[in-house]
Image 1: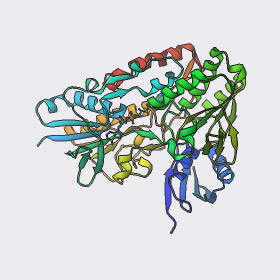
Image 2: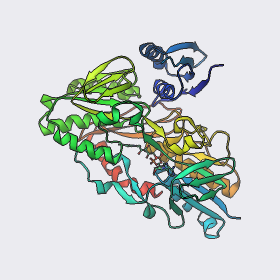
Image 3: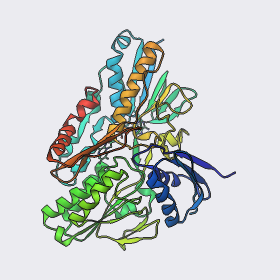
Image 4: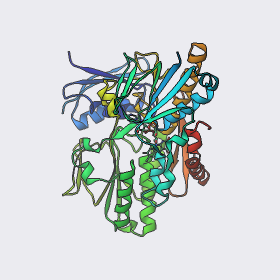
Length: 76
Length: 379
Ligand SMILES: Cc1cc2nc3c(=O)[nH]c(=O)nc-3n(C[C@H](O)[C@H](O)[C@H](O)COP(=O)(O)OP(=O)(O)OC[C@H]3O[C@@H](n4cnc5c(N)ncnc54)[C@H](O)[C@@H]3O)c2cc1C
């Protein structure tokens, strides 16, 4: 089973979900995953955009009732 | 047996908590039923936000420091003896001198530290003002700078989310006053897809950047710096050349946190409401070192510290918690050398900054002086 870190950034105004994800990705090894929970609409599009730009892997991206759950695998 | 409270870290959070507890629990301390110990790394307390003004010649070093012993109430036992292990099972803190401090309640307030070494070439190629030595060197670099390409590079995570924009605006005003702005170009790089993590602040900053001719590169996370070629490359694949590189280095929590197995990167897993270390009911975590997804700022540390003072007082006198932390953060934002604005938010209320004014700038300057009263727990 791949290691997965959970970051619950729901309601987090600053530094916000993407900044939390970037910080967390730096702490995991290549191949490990970070799950980020976010209630911020902007991050729902910014996170996949950033993940694609850097070349990490978007493993899951699900809209729940009032938040998004995204799983990112560190690829490099 | 006297109840023992140990606080690791004598920065902003540790100092406010120690003094606050001393005042709330005066009679318990007088009767010998309670002791408060602060474990720190230095006998000098530095007012970190003052560093912002240092490279621009707007403050003197001596104004940033106070004797830590004098900031702490005399009833507090204070050791300058860094903790090198925190054992939450044995309820013991061990220090460099070999002393072992047992506790009934522990507060972890060890802050965050700069990690420029995490990005190859950054320490050699860049300047920063986030610590004293860096600010001194940046002052010299700015004095010597005669114009050219300046990059203000911001990395995640970092404390004081507003400082990067403040640095940029102050730098612009500084270079203009020096008469070299017309020969210079400032480019601001930021990790996410806008100029600031707070959307309203980002929306306000964009037209200001346009007005001042400041360029920006968003989605830029530094991967490496080549100090010889004077280039900085991002994880996203963009390379920029520079004459002067100013950075906000990435941060991590204190080494002792990692060494004690208390949290990856030095960030301690913390309950966002009670501020308990996850899994303990007698260990509280305060300030920059928590892993709560919230701004790492002095105001956060202050509001959290007030909550911990109330809860520890209540636990000791009544055996119950008093209240939860509401996620409150308040920040002044310097928008140049003469104007400022402010922004506040909490877990429920989104941020909404007001228009910049000279009045707010003066309030921030006034707060720079009032800081010492707040550390003493008087504000
Ligand atoms: C340039 C700059 C500008 C800033 N501007 C603002 C601002 O305008 N507004 C704002 O709200 N915030 C601002 N901040 C942020 C603010 O200073 C910090 O967020 C705040 O100091 C955090 O408090 P803390 O107690 O968690 O950490 P600190 O105040 O950093 O204290 C941590 C303490 O723990 C000690 N420590 C570390 N390891 C050990 C150990 N092993 N044993 C014992 N002690 C240890 C350290 O020596 C330090 O004294 C700014 C910071 C900087 C650098």
